[in-house]
Image (cartoon, rainbow, N blue to C red; front, side, top):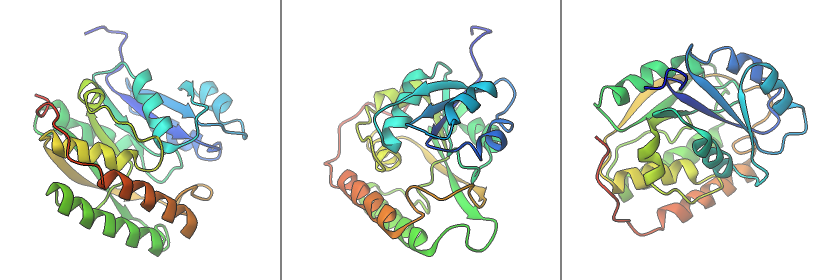
Length: 231
């Protein structure tokens, strides 16, 4: 393996997260690369991330999925991780999530969020997540509890899924298409901290509703015939 290639790439979608970036970036595991995808920040997030050593990618098309897709395209490591950039999730935990993928035990690891304090996860967001998990079980047979943003998989396998959603449905589409392809999926509990600033999605009922709408559109897609699980 190229000694200059990172052990893993960590994709961090970013929209005005200057307050959280120092905490997040200092927790990137040694030998791993942080890819901060700036999605139109106006608070200096891109410049701050670059000054802290992150590889910064600009994505002018707004949307969580657009930022994730840009980060995946920029990734070069064999394993790619996704993590929110708002300090709710600790990137320092990613090696433990990545190990089952590296060992070939599973194909996709999802971080199941466990709030550390009351009020960290608003009730309307929890209810929406619970309903979506139920719909995912019905659609795919996967018994998941959370569709959280912390996840790990192999880069080439992710590219083969040909994910097309560029909004809030991207994480769900990844899970659905992975299930269609016969991937082995595992949930791992991770602590979920109060975020720095207000969420663009789950911080309001309207944001949550738009996310649910995007995800319902993904669930309405017919099952795809994809290549088998990565080995």
